[in-house]
Length: 337
Image 1: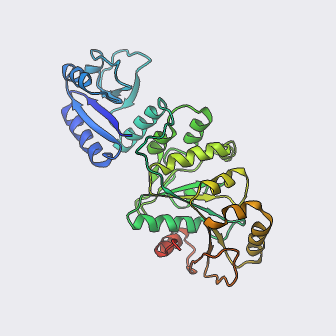
Image 2: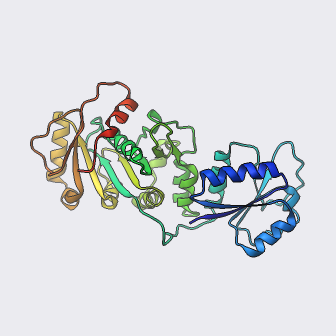
Image 3: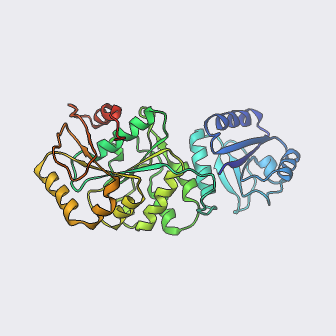
């Protein structure tokens, strides 16, 4: 779904700068038009339907806004603003354009519904899991994502661990994934559009991601159906979706197993890891249900001679205490076995 945006301001320099940046950086999700007078604005909306309009006060009070889904008042501290209706939402004019876009899309998402568009794509979904923590599951998920990005794919890393490790690898100063959780709980608005507005991208690796939850309970309140909706939203805007899961096997994790195209189970050679993997394979019904999509990832240079599955990916041991260095080094490994 492409957003039709109209920038309505008599500040020509601002309109030109904003429209050029949007056309260059966000052409995949929006079409941008510009007008500088109320007359031109009314002419534009009479011939085309617009989803969002950014308006100066000079145009706002004389414009017909009935056909605009989301009119937003551009405001700044050094400009005089008349008393406006409480129904008109405001957005700061002079701010980082990436922040303006995020705020604009978040406001717009709250007025939409979660309807899958016919032309929407679905990413290949790869779930990373282990019955034991500390074996390198997150490292493998990030290495897979970084490798996909290096090959020109749009790679999205979705961390659904009980305790998120996102901040250990990426800048975590953006909008929290808890913003999406709140929308899932309320069942109002478009989670797809919201994800577009809050997702971040690591410049070094090219990986897209969502910042960690505000607190532990935010993750725990979600149902398996909530997880399914979130995953579906993320999968519509990327090529490769890597889901990093906690080392449990509850209903939510099992839902991800069912949704995933592949389940990569990560292990090392410790007795505890091998024992837990054996228990999962022999004592859990879900193993047989998803066996055809399981691939074993042998981490830290482990040589697996006997396995509960046929497909094995071996990751070499990387001698570094820097977790970011480790996953970037492993990014050259092929996970498509």
